[in-house]
Amino acid sequence: MDNFPLFAVSPVDGRYSRQTEALRQYFSEYALIRYRVRVEIEYFIALCKIPLPQLADFDQSHFDSLRSIYRNMTEEDAAKVKEIEKVTNHDVKAVEYFIKECFKSLGIEKWSEFVHFGLTSQDINNTSVPLSLKEALHDCFMPSLMEICDTIKTMATLWKDVPMLAKTHGQPASPTRLGKEFKVYQVRLQEQIRQFRLLTYPAKFGGATGNMNAHKVAYPQIDWIGFGNDFVASLGLKRSFPTTQIEHYDNLAALFDCLRRINIILIDFSRDIWTYISMEYFRQRVKAGEVGSSAMPHKVNPIDFENAEGNLGIANALFTHLSMKLPISRLQRDLTDSTVLRNVGMPIAHSLIALNSLKKGLSKLILNEPALKADLERNWAVVAEAIQTILRRENYPNPYETLKALTRTGAAINHDVIADFIETLDVSESVKEELRAITPMNYTGF
Image (cartoon, rainbow, N blue to C red; front, side, top):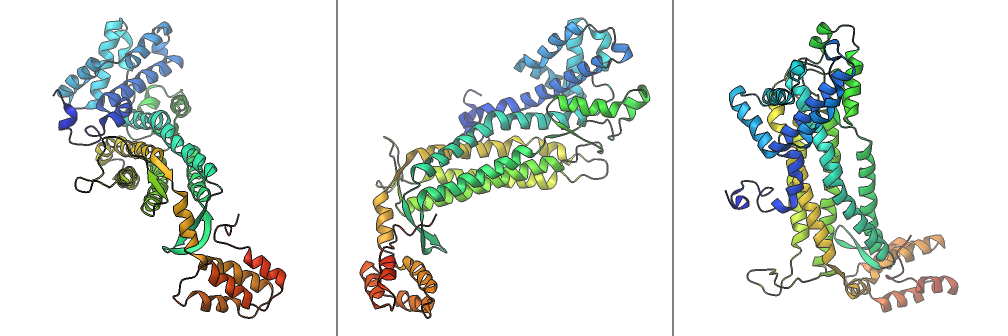
């Protein structure tokens, strides 16, 4: 099909295909085949390094040729695996047979029966998938996330002295500073990223039911538990042990849960920026030729933050299902995890689309400082907290109730009203001077 994106069922591979193209090297069918071949080849090499008695005469100069099978895998190679699968009706077995054909072409078929030796398909799947997830997050997702974090940090610094009316329950509240509100999100994200980096990528590697039965019966003298631990660690993963036939996915669920928390913070951020735009605290740069509304020519909609929120929501729905479903399997295994695991890339893709939208949206923001100042000027009532607190310090009778009576009359509270009120107070002139100095613009705390 010449124009595939027009016919893609998922917008990940259609409308947003350019944004998610890099993920094809980690989550496509081609990628899954390549990662499976990689694990099988590295496992065979690890057996040679023990060495198993029957592999002691294997010429280790072939290791580079073996690794080139997955390092230089082509689309045609992957297609061969799919052709073999039509006969085997088993995807991992098809990979095994493909590798054996490669052994034959390399003239090393004598040792081909040690491909997939003692393993079950989940030893390959439950190592390939977390490996692809780890590398995709490291190569694609985290750089984009860190770029957003850096942008938020820059804005927090740039606007650290810009006073802003806070809104609690949607109502005017004690003033804050715009930069501080951005810093809240910077710190929240940094903390979740810190926690994320402490998590491990789990892999199951233990034979048909997790006990390495076949390994032990063939070579009982070898420390297969230690071998399994070392082999999985060599791939940058952490071996789960003991297990059933499959990875129990608890630690994989922890990764998904942390990614979901990161996305929740970004949803919160997107909604706040959307609201600030609606309050005209920010304007948006206009790009020539763009249309905001098909009917209303004047509109410049905050679509980037809306797109981000929508895609983050889809990602989190998938992360939730992955983390809640995968750890549950009947007895030693059922097959429900298999089809679910094929969707691991989808929430990463939607998250990446969201990060791209946020990057675009943030680049359009123009601070409208007069709007922030005007909002503060309209809300002198917010200094009531400051006044009543100082009056408490001075042991003034019923300060809270006094300020409540002043500010809840329904009449507009402006500078003059506050100034006149201060003059009625039975306090020293020095205290009055202290109170007169308080404004919505400088009552911003630390």
